Length: 398
Image (cartoon, rainbow, N blue to C red; front, top):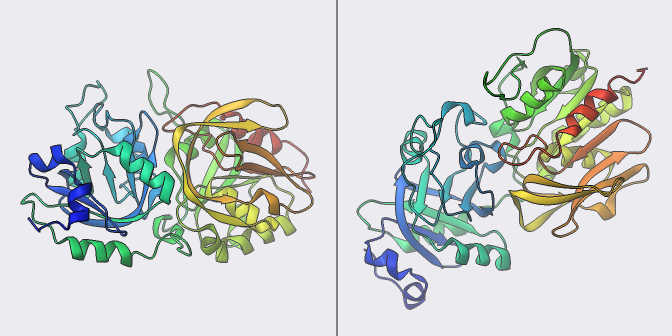
């Protein structure tokens, strides 16, 4: 193994060192966290974030919003329910890797069809276990989301200088348009509804509200929620134009979640939304990146957060009712509530830090939220937003 500098020796985990570490997390500032590798071997570079959810690691890893990121799970029991084909939010993981406190255990769920380590190996994603995730999380909270290289090398040989250089060379998510990398290649229809016991996933039948969903990195469960709420869903790529949208004669426009810097994706997404707003009075509903795209189109601004919000236990207050919802969140950028223009109001705020979590136009059925009402993983307190979107399509159209 490469010799450690004194600063590295101070940061190394003694228990992991004693067990001959086969993995490491190397931060751009030189800090090193040792661990035991599982899943795929090799290296991955990205922005390190932490997620506080107690369940749903498979859904998190396959959420396109995590493109360009490596996820530290604060909950220690990762891998305990295995994985299955039904819980993927997309066909492949988009998170570059995962960091956990304890090595994954054998699955103990009747729904499991494979264990986490094998799943990661097949999907080409690195896992690092045996890490002091509490300490790592504190570092992220205090210093901001760092750029890191994670490496899994079974022989335990690491070139720390090279790994540091790769972490420092990572450009970061600011200014990065990742929606183009995760969006669908062509349009398609969606009719699968939410999972329900004992039937599982069912297909919706009969007529519904015609909705065009723009895929900036859409999770499957968002599309299922739209279908369950009564929508006939047509999904279009992130680069769709207003002409593409109108070609489907929709009654409503949905803007999905997604990764990267909203200002970068907005270069092509904002003009489309503005044109739809100008030429139509149809309802518009956005989630996560879609929320940020709508805000930009209406004249607001977005900013990069210190470490973002990632978890399934975030309290959000709806200002009009005073109701508090427990929500799922996954975002590193936020809408600056101080920049909302006239005719646009703040509808939801985070009770953790007061950041914006929702907006609405005062004279039209156009609204969006930063959190994830589709959950997966997480609570379903906010599903009413899908129903509100459908109900708004019942109003007279021009």
